[in-house]
Length: 89
Image 1 (cartoon, rainbow, N blue to C red):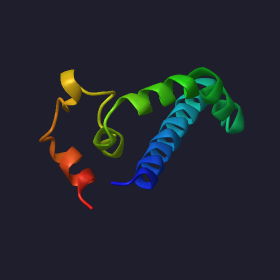
Image 2 (spheres, rainbow, N blue to C red):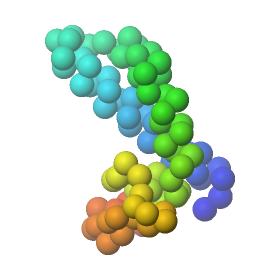
Image 3 (cartoon, rainbow, N blue to C red):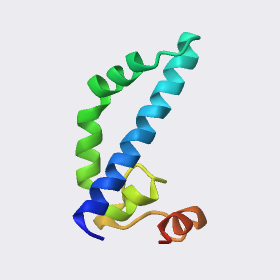
């Protein structure tokens, strides 16, 4: 996979994380926080997300099932059916 694909998958994962945060924060607040929750995610989590995204293999970002890899960059769930399905072209 090329660098362009890597960036695409990092951006997709970041968008998923923002949407997840927006949903959870809105549920807690009892109203749709919309842009307010997005800004909160950026302030609180964007930096650590970028560090995480740059520290794991591309396959883990594309897979999206874990929070990082096991020792020596090996996926702790390499044969997880959902992971394999997501990795299919």
